Length: 56
Image 1 (cartoon, rainbow, N blue to C red):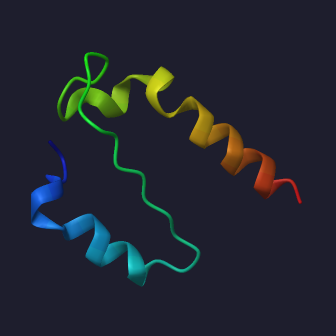
Image 2 (cartoon, rainbow, N blue to C red):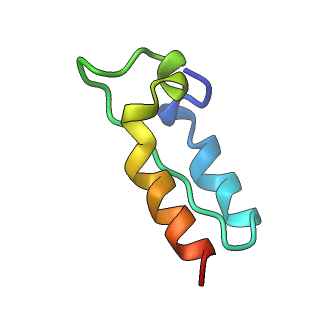
């Protein structure tokens, strides 16, 4: 994993990012460990929401 959830690094450090938001994907048959970030189907909905918000 890139940021193992048990370390709490992401949750702690995202607070330092203005307007930042972090998404932690739960383990499933669709995830691939730290390679899950390359599986666009897992985060497509989040990207669509970001793009919609940025058009405002």
